[in-house]
Figure 1 (cartoon, rainbow, N blue to C red):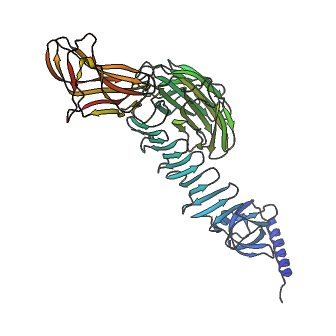
Figure 2 (tube, one colour; figure 1 turned 60 degrees about the horizontal axis):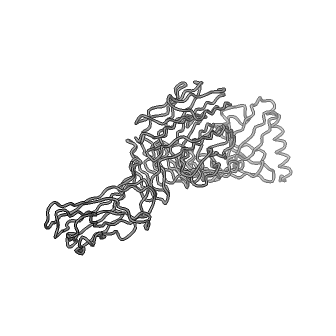
Length: 612
C-alpha cells in the first residue's frame, strides 16, 4: 500500500495529538532550547531537529525525548535550512512544540555557525560583528564606529567623531588621529601625550620632566599652550586639583576645575573653593545620577602652584576629576579672568548626544577661551566632536569597566575677530542610557601672545631664529674728508620683517679704519640707523664707536658694537651705518673704512628669541 501526502499528513496529525496528550500528563517548565536541522519537509511544513543532548539533559521535564535526544519533528515557522541552528520552543501549557529560526534579523557566515570564528550581520543593531576562535568579538562595524582587535587590549577604533584611535595590550590609548585635534602620540608608561602634531605645528613633551619643545608656524600670533595637570581621585568631601608648574613671570593666572558624580540622588550640594581662590561657578543637579562642577581662579604669588582643594558639602560622590591650568603672563598687561558661562546640567537618554556650549560674554579678538565639559553616564563616551580651532589640554576618566563612568576634559582656543555665540558638540556613547553633561566656558583677557611666523619654543619660551638680515662688504670705502661727512658706510640691501615681542641683535663690525691729518680735537662716530616702516625716516638707533683725539697724527683701529632692538609692533625695517663728524669738530682729517680680502665689514640683524 502506498501512502499519499494526505495520508502522511494525517499520520503526523495523529502523532502530534498523542504527543499533546502525553505532554499534558507531564509537568513542564517553558523553555527554549537549541538544535540543528537535519531535514526539511516543506510540503508538510515540518522540520526534523536533532536536539542538543547537553541542553536536554539539564531539564528532563522539557521533552518526552529525554534520555534519547535524537531527532524530533517540529512545526516549521519561517525559512529554515538543513544544518541551521534553530530554537525549539516547548510550550508548557499544552505540550505542543514549535520551531523558529535562531536567526532573528541576523545572518551568520559560515551559515548556521554559532561558535568559533565567524561573521554575524545583525539587522536589529545595524552592525557587523567578527568573532575569533575563542568567541571573542575582534571586529565591529555599525553606523557610529568601527574597531578591529579585542574589546579590551590591542585595538584600532575609528568613528566619525573621535577619528582613529590605537590602543595597546593594556587597552590604553597610544595614538589618536582626528580632523580637529590632529595626531596625538602618548607615552606608553605615563600615558601623557608625548607628541602632538596639528596644522599649527609640532609639540614634543618629555613624560618625566614635562619639558616641551614646539615648532609652530602661522601668519597670526598665538598664545602659548597653558601649563596643565589633571587627576582622578576622591577622598571624602575634599577634591584636590593637582600641583602644576607656573611660567615664573610673576603674573601667571591660576585656574582650577573640579567635577564629581554619584550613581544616586544626593540632593543639593555646594562647593567651597580652594583657599586664596575666587569661586567663579558652582553647578550641581541631583537625580538618579548626580553631577556637580566648580571653577575657581587665582593670580598666584608662588613659583610652583601647589595642590588646591575644593570642598563639597557631601561626602557621597563616587567619582571625581580635577584639572589645574596656568595661563602664561609676562606680556605688556597681565592675563586676568574676564567672564564665564556655566551651562546647566543636561540630561540625555540616547546613544548620540548633541548639545550647544555657550560662549562667555564679552569675547573680543585675542581673548583666551577655556572650555570644561563634565559627563556622568551609565555608558562610556567613545568619541566626540571638537569644534574647529579648539585644542585639547587634557582629559580624565574614571569608572571604565563599570556601570558608572565619569569623565571631564579641557580645551582652549584664542578668540578670532568674529567668534560664534555657541559651539555644537556631539558625543557618541557605547549604548543608549542615562547621561548627564555640564559645560563651562571661561574668557581670559590679555593672555601672553607669541609673535607670528615660524618659531621654535622650549617650555613655552621662544627660541632664537638666527640671522634675519645681513650685508658683508668686501671693498674699501672712498677716503672721505671730514667736510664730506656724514656718509653711509653699509646698508642691508633688503628690508627686514620684525615682530613685536621679539628681540633682535643689531651688530656692526669693521676690522680696520684709518684716519690721517688729524688734529688734537677731531671727533667723529659711527651710528647704526633704523628706518622703521620702510620709508618713515631714518632714526639713530645706536653709536657703535665714538672717537675724540687728544693728539695730532695718523690712526688705525677697528670697531665692533651693537645692541638689542625690540619693535613695538610688527613692521618692516631697513638698517644702515653712517660715519658722522660731531658738530664743532675740526674739518682737517680724512677717514676710510677697509673691506678688502679678509678685512670684510659686516652689518647683521639676528632674531634672539622672544622677550621674557
